[in-house]
Image (cartoon, rainbow, N blue to C red; front, side, top):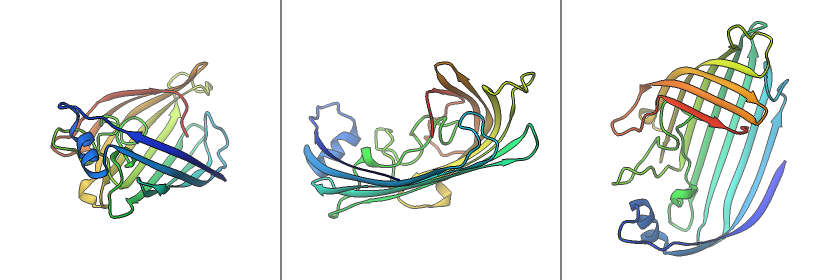
Length: 230
């Protein structure tokens, strides 16, 4: 169980060439805002390994809210992962993530509090955080609703069956970001990824091809990330 409280003070100065999502935020909320932030959450992890899991569950539920101040909002994020051991070498991973939020006091959530998706940690084959609504300049602004699903078939790297530091996955990803859970907004992709746990941290690389996209989507076939993940 986790909880926390904090204070945030945001002052923004705009210029003639400021991105539209910034100027739209200032027009809606003003240039100076503050918020008392509260967070409460729960997490449970029964995986048999944090590096090379083959069975178990990892779940979390987190509620974040602007409790007081001029930026008031709430957002709930839930995630559930389950590993199914199929054989000694093959494991099926199913992951689902749901996000729901809204602004308070008759205003929307600030764009920097919205949910985002796209990239090697959510829907691969699309540039990081670019799925969903965009402003008139083409910049992603996120949304108050999030739905992401992943299915991966995990297996050893060819020729390195007993090496637990490297693993391959064939995957299918899908997700949406918006102001509703309209299935017509779902993007999806298929591909192959490799996870290598080095001495300096995990390195994850993927090659993906979008199979459902929309005009204006920012695609990215090869992606990688370096660092720890939940």
